[in-house]
Length: 337
Ligand code: PEP
Ligand code: MN
Image (tube, rainbow, N blue to C red):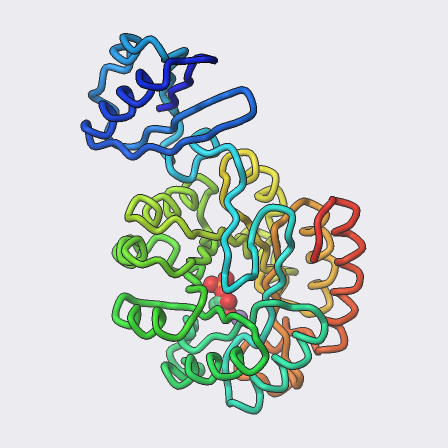
């Protein structure tokens, strides 16, 4: 529920109100504008008589939040969440670009790619070490060794790293080695995993499942936040539709919809949406124009021989060209890359 405080309310009365709500076991999020003071109150408020709060003279109004998602809801927190990953800001007026190979294949491979993406302006290095492959016979990733490679190359170039975690078993390795934990489309509703992620503080990039609604996606973010981890970044990566030309259909409308419903940052993965490298630039530029907080793009210096997703990986030169164009679009929407 949302509690709005009267202008010039007596401070002692506001304190009393907050103590009362805390004593009921609710979590309280404050939001101060220039003229308004609002408290978002989260918890099991179903059985709570919200009218009782009008007994406090400072209360102007109390309303219930209708949506099932509370902590991720913009009604609870009106200002954008900005997540700081070793000085790289995700959210607000920044557009963050994460780039790198689909899979970590060797130290040399990650080193070559990291160097070029950094030169072009990427500020976070991506690379999968545990791969959710459709076929059990396909390359499954280098595992912990892959995380170690990503970590040492990231440190060499001063790039924070992101990698995909697939199960609860490896959480400790990820907390140790990575700066952002990616939860892939296939695990968006792995609630046991999401609950564990609520117990850590490492930022989580939560991809939308390819057959999930926006509300289901926000509920998954709610699982992580309700467990105590506020550092959630949403990532749209395309959904499954009847259209076979692209690997998935990029749902660009998620950007304005998420901006309206939630305070969390949203970034776009045009690579997995397109499935084809020659579509990645257009989708990236459209995402920036739509107001996305960032992009995560697959880049490979020899995509022909990539262990996974070569068909959608950009060569370094194409990535560089994309970054130049994305910067001019960013200016048009008052953002910076
Ligand atoms: C990936 O990022 O390489 C990946 C497997 O992503 P998704 O979960 O979006 O398919
Ligand atoms: Mn991939």
